[in-house]
Amino acid sequence: MTMRTTQPSTFTDTFRFPFGHLFETLDSTPQQSRGPLDVSEGTDRYFVEMDLPGFTIEDLDITVMGRELHVKGRREMPKHEDRTWHRRDARRVEVDEILRFPVELDVDKVEASFANGVLTIELPKAGAALPKKIQVKTK
Image 1 (tube, rainbow, N blue to C red):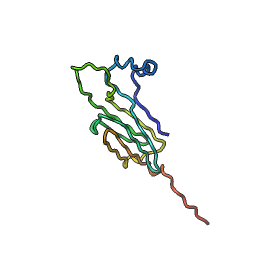
Image 2: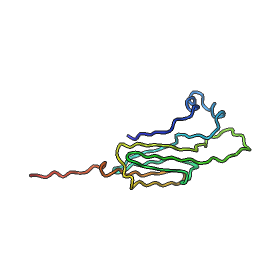
Image 3: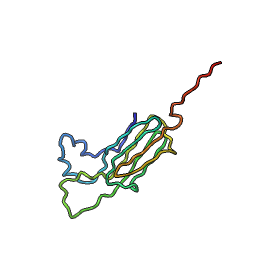
Image 4: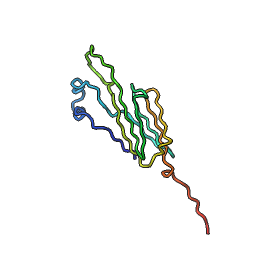
């Protein structure tokens, strides 16, 4: 099982469910949010896909150590001081995701690609984490 860790959410997130979008008009500042994320497992590797619309590859920093993947990024929001916002949903400006996997990862073989706002990461399992068939000998 993969564990997912993010930075604490804002105060208004606590009250978002019971009060709907009431706080949207009060808090129109860009914020960090927990975005869509898919994690799947193949025989010898894990696959992570993250939706990051508006980000560029230069905005992202990806590190892998041991069993942990850390994706961090920040993008600048255009400033439109001549506008009054009535709704602003597309305001994810930061990502800070830490995924912990149940086995060690082969950090030298991790591959990442970014296309159409989707970050895809392939994380091969370390050799020690892969099953090895043992041949039984007779004496």
